[in-house]
Image (cartoon, rainbow, N blue to C red; front, side, top):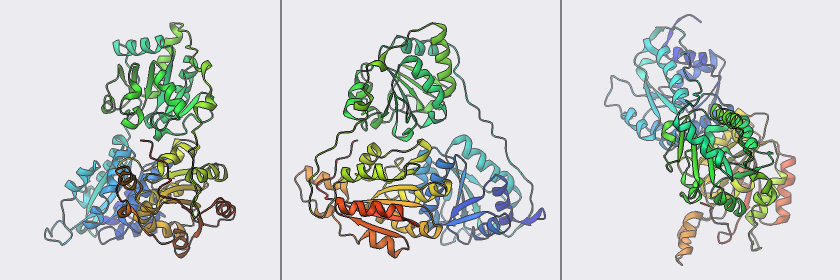
Length: 540
């Protein structure tokens, strides 16, 4: 291709030069020619979504599972306003995305769809980069990709529609990534942290999403200390198969693990901002020393103020602490020798009423945990069902676990399941959603999964209600009928949208659904019909 090309071709070429071969989106007048060039001129693949927000969510999950910068594109005005919840979810998820967003023509300020897109993007927490002119395309695209990686958030590149057919001389521009792990500096902070860890008799190590890359270094430190290991929700699966892994820390712990955490005297926290649900609003951190390690200074002290703080890379810091423990010949704590891991990791099963026409939710989850493919990517939507899913369904590792928890929204799960499926095409994706979440967002994109031929298993927890609100009415002895809905059959809807669907109202029908797993040929939806009065409460 000649270096003298149209601006829309230059944007497509610059995107391709950043190693991008897959783009999610929905086309409009400001981005359609760019998408066409990305596919036809550069061999890229375009995944058309049914809704603009879906394209951002697909890219978000794709970035999480693939570990790469992912790209979505949308048009201007209402197309971008449709993305505000998705952009907020992505910004709080700390993952690198580039959103190629069209904008109305600069020379037409009275355009029907014109808004101040910079101000709109700012309120979501995403970054904003302006395409300054057709001549600066390569540099502006490169800066968007650079910022996405170093800031670890979505960057919206604003592309005015009237630039697209201007002729430009394309010059390749890819910025070097100036980001490297930071070791911990010697000094009082390090000495204090090591002193607290060395003197602990019941130390416990907690790892969050910011420490996922430091698994081996953290395990070596834990083994040396003889300290049990735990993770935040987002790092679920990080220490899977380790003999002293007590799984999720906080309100999602088993009762036995919760008591163990409460009895510990030092919590060493790697890569976690110590969210209220992780600490049970601070209760689990009382009367113990807290050492917090995070490469991001703003993560430290956000949830609670630690006794010692180290602004540094998790892996390098774990190695440094281990080195000084060895140098000082600090004896292991012996804490793990007291532990019964089987008891610490077993969630008690609630008593479920066997009501005709309904399946017990925990009964179904326990059976599905055994029956679903183990090499899965696990995706969860929001809703009152989710905490039991997090506690009872396993994921191979944190990269294979996608939870749409960053903004407290429902209706984001299926879109992210599609992005995850395209990043892990050799593995099945299992997605749990509620009836409200599926109607809000899943039904928009189930057919997209069908068209893509994804190996997707969707489990809809259908209690015919907005469950969190239903509980509040019940607790106050009020009529909950305003929270209840008579939805259509989701199993039949899945079939109408081109997939497969099975409705489950009993244990025998659950076995039929499990048999359908073995013969699935595309997206399969399993609808669990639940009694709204007999669904376990959220553990938050």
